[in-house]
Length: 585
Image (cartoon, rainbow, N blue to C red):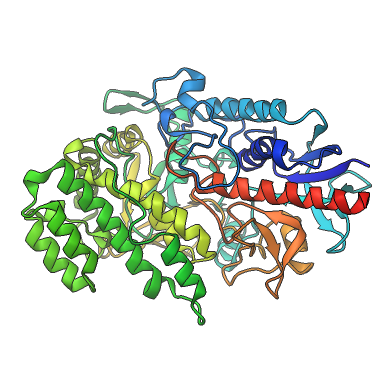
């Protein structure tokens, strides 16, 4: 009897698992025939987020040369390396272009088709364009995967969940805002994937409050401006007259930092240095567990500082006051933040060359403006300065920090759930918008269609409207009849609108206090409340406690998602082989 493997989710993560199954099958497959069932209502390859059918105005936020779905020798994995083209090589694009998401969707579809072609002849793949509703079955027996609109379940020897970003039920605050909007005839758009949001209710010329200043906001901005017929001439925006006026704020009050606009030259910092596998193993072995801020963050700070100063000393030695050898020796043994500050002050004369993570993270903390108009000009200056720095190789220590962030993330995923703060910090510094998008923000601000509210933005519902305030401009407030929450829904098991995760949790799967599905960091098997890995269920993705920065990555940066995909694929193949052996005995 042929074995059955069900993969729920056929987007980039499911495609990555399929690629790793194909790469590892020659060495590990049972050889008795395998049917792989891909369950996803969206097309395989791109899935929902990267499907080809979305606005051509929406871009990726990475250069085409920085996007790959293929492993290389920097990925710490047991399976074979199967190299392949980056997005820019495959699409024959300029490597520095920010490709449209439709192009990425086509690339992912090609990767999927290549993985199919690379599977052994006795493996068949079937796509079921439906939603998976629940997974049942005994721990030691075949699993049942129930699909929407199908009376009988798929039977599976193993199940791998690669669900990606999911819709969620509203939390208490969002539910109250939505109810207030219904009662008073207002518009409230909750957290969502922006390309799927119905923006038609946002009226031309009307003020719209927007909470969130990250990548979801960038998509919203594009769809409500160019998407409504406006256009840019140089650095001037020519409106169509159909745009609303966006009042945007967030906890930080500033957009994510621009993508860096130059290439790396010279030696890379030797990472990891202060946060690597040894330190991670020590943290995991602590009898009382670890606290992120107390135990992990100091290692992160030291690692990022090392990456920053390695680049500064080796690429810009004229801006330092001692040799790298001396600095590195003293930096390595510095035992507390005060000692580090004294060392850096002595070695790096210009404060602009020193790494200040707190200032990078919260640039408006304690900053106050006398008027709303003064703040608009001040934030435009901030964005201009960020663009200038991020496109000037004289500040290439910033690129060192970027590489440090990638290295750190690759280690932190081994620790399991570390809370949501790190992911936001990483995105703010390392996963910001293309420079041209920030220039468009500046043009829209000058045109009066984009207005900044500031840091610590709060929204209240009263007097029949939504009202936004914040401390950056004391006394300022703005009223609107529309509120958009410009961010993806938080990944939580308990509030996932898709019932599959809730049913899985009810069936014994454990969740972290933040609502993430607990999985074994070694191979992605789902854990129960006692910490036991399920023998037949695996899970990968943003709703698990080993989430990574993304399903694809820059070439030659270790690709933590690729490492996870390989470990899960190999574990699945070994388990299937063992099951086949037991049946044959």
